[in-house]
Image (cartoon, rainbow, N blue to C red; front, side):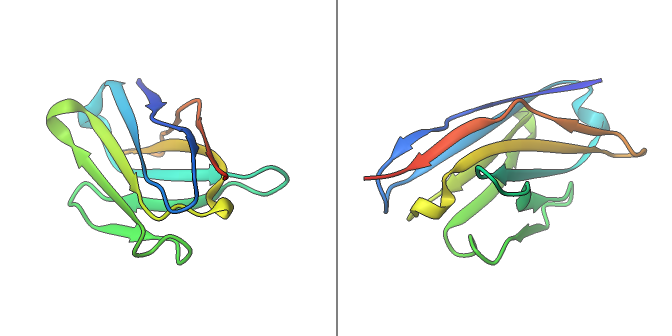
Length: 117
């Protein structure tokens, strides 16, 4: 079993930065790809960025060049560095992990990011 706990959300002005963290506890060795999703009010949850175990990253077009996903395996932690934030980035951000050898999927509880002046 894997538990995911996000942190780092908050209120930031347009153009500002935040770094989200997702700490994984349990069987971190059994985790493969990890992702960040977000869900804005009234909208579907969308994939923001993903990182494979071999460190191949992919990003939604809306965040390319502004967000960076990374992982520190020694700390069992996934990060999302968010720069030049825009009001449309306002959402609850969720950490997601996929099983390395099976179809397991794990979710964190989410952290709120609000971009507003």
